[in-house]
Amino acid sequence: MINPKKMGTKAGRDVLPEGIRVRRGCDPMLVSRRQFLFVFSSIAFFRGSLIDARAGYSETIVALKRAYANEIQAHLNYLSFVEKAKMESYPGIAHFFICLATSESLHARNFKEVLSGLGVHGWDPPKPEVEVFSTKVNLKNALDFEIEDIDQRYPQIYEESKPEKHETALRNIVYAWESEKQHRDLLQKMRSGTGIFFGLLSKTIEAASARFVVLFVCHTCGSTMVKLPEDSCPICKNPVSMYKEVARFK
Image 1 (cartoon, rainbow, N blue to C red):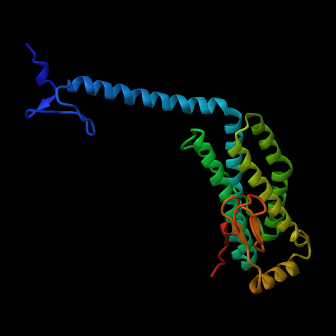
Image 2 (cartoon, rainbow, N blue to C red; image 1 turned 180 degrees about the vertical axis):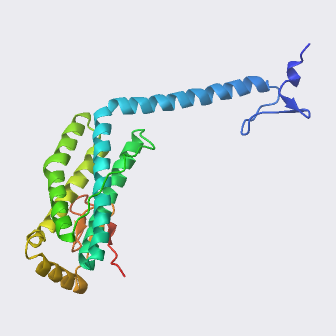
Image 3 (cartoon, one colour; image 1 turned 45 degrees about the vertical axis):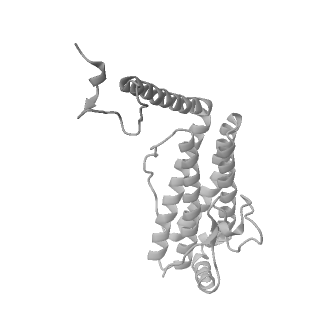
């Protein structure tokens, strides 16, 4: 006949999962079963909550995935443009491109964090293809990409996400959208240089950047500035201390 008091023992002591304590006189197997049921139900509740979160924000998740993929594309584009500008001896323009790449990486980070909060983990878009031409053409293509972001992609992403009212998602979409407008404004200052006067303009950019051009990026929202605001970021309203200067190439 089995003696229940000797079940689950070793060397005369009760063997229980680490962290479980039993009052004297309690049945160890009963406590173990209770602990198991508690852990199992907690896991089930947690998984159910994630499923509910995904179900409640399904359109937002789809839109955020597209926004995240778009920012990864932009980030990789600019990193490639940096290398081309360096090869063509335009370190000032390369510095400008690395500033934009930094901003886009912050947008991607923000979107990935929101997706993670919605239960989307370990997802990454397929690695995008990057087309690199001369620095003159890269500047023009960068401006076209930013204008498409402002006029088409982000308005659509925002409208698709808006009905589900996920505040953090909507806030970060607006952050990226407004930052792209700053990118556009900076790129438009160079637009005339994508034509026959590019050589003259690029020399002007290089001479100016060597003397005084400094670029800053807000590490909350990706705002991109050539001069620090007086009090706070114009996009996310966080303290100006969130801006970091973009390091120059040595």
